[in-house]
Structure formats: C-alpha cells, structure tokens
Length: 298
Image (cartoon, rainbow, N blue to C red):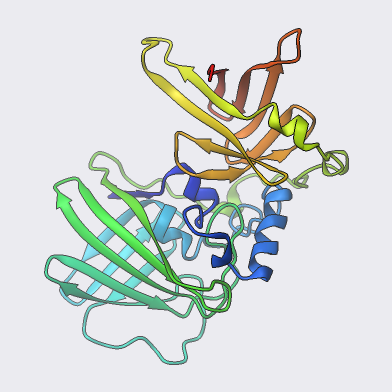
C-alpha cells in the first residue's frame, strides 16, 4: 500500500512552475473558467468519473501488485491500471479510455512507464487544466528506501500545451492500513453545487482593494508557538490575487465578497481588519476546522 500525492499548489495548478506561454490559449481560458466556477464542473467530484491521469500525481492510496511481466495498480474507487512488462509496444491507434494504456521497462532499478490512449473527459488537476486524447505520460519510479519512492511524471499533450513538463510526486508506504471501498455514486450527492452564486459572480475588486491583502500570514501551533501549522502567502499578478499555501506554489484566489476568497481546495478564507482598515489576520474555514493566521509585519 502506497500513498501518492503532490504538494498543495500542484493539486490545483499542475503548471504552477511553468511559464504562462506553456499553455495554449483555449486550455488557459478553460482553466480560468473552472477556477472562477470554484470546481462546479469537476468530472471526478460532480460527475463521479474516474480521475484518469490524476491518479498518477495525486491519486491517494494505491495497492501495487508486481509480477515479472505485469504490474497492476489498484485504487479504492475500484479502478485499476495494468502496466505490461513483456516488451509489447503501446498500441498505435488505441480506443481511448480513462486510465489509458501502459507499458513499462526497467532502467537499472528505476521502473519507466509510458502511457497513452487517454480519453479527454478528465482533468489534470483539481483546478481544471484540461487535456486531449493526444496526451502521453512517462512515469519514473525509483525506490530510495524501504518506505519511500521517488516518482516523476512527465506530461506531453501538444494539442493543449506547447511543451512537455515534469512534476514530482511524493510516494510513501502505508504499511498498517487497507482499502475502504469507495463508490462515488453511493455517496449522497449535493444537487445544489453551483460554484459561485450570481451575486458572487458580480464581485469585481479594484487593485487597491486586492493589494491591501498582500502579505504573509502565519498560524502558530497551539502546543508550541515556535512551530507553524500553516503559512499563507498572498500576492498579486496583474489584476488577480494569488495564494501560496506552505510555500507550495501560487493558486488563483477567487473573490466571493470584498473580504472573502476561495482557492477551492481549502474552503473559504476571510480577512479581518482593525479600526484603521489595516488587515490584521485571516481565518481559513475548512472541513477539518478553522485556522486563524496572523499577518506578519514586513
């Protein structure tokens, strides 16, 4: 049993380290729209579709079954991948599916997996970066210790992006756990997921208003104030506000009101000011509880 996951920033923006011209205009516009809609169209959470390529980078728990000529990767949502090690090539004209087709080979003690044949019904991240059926991926698994593997995933989709790029994935052994069956369609569905309300969609904040939130906000541990439990860095890019969570890359910060924003992943963030209108702290409201972070004096 292994857990696979990227750093927070990459979960919502898999291109966080790439230059703006990496993405083709249509794909950039699609991603921007999905973030502004706060995930209401996510095919995995709203449509109950498989994660597809997202399984490689942030797929949660995975059970890896290895034999000399075949590796099978099982997931809690009853999906699976087959990686053939018998020397066969990738199919030239595959019937597209959610998990694609995968073949692998060994380079020393590194497993190299090449995949293609994905359909275009999934996203590459929670934020909404799309892909086409031209997507190809290359994974490199290298076990560095008993409980850890290094994994890099290179993605190449020339119809949506101008060049391939590579992301690193954290892979750690989970020795004392087992799958709990998860079937999306058996989970009570919220039929009222609408993204931002019509009132929230009308919110347009000036650069001066956005600029007053820029800064670093720290949430110290209650047990040991010298330790941090969260670090939020707010910045601006053009007319947009961005948030970096624990230094893991900038995420678009979508306004819901003059002082409330959402990066989707962590719920809502509310800023508070003193009697002079100076922003002093924020409160992050999430499913696991609230986090109060104080603005650091620059």
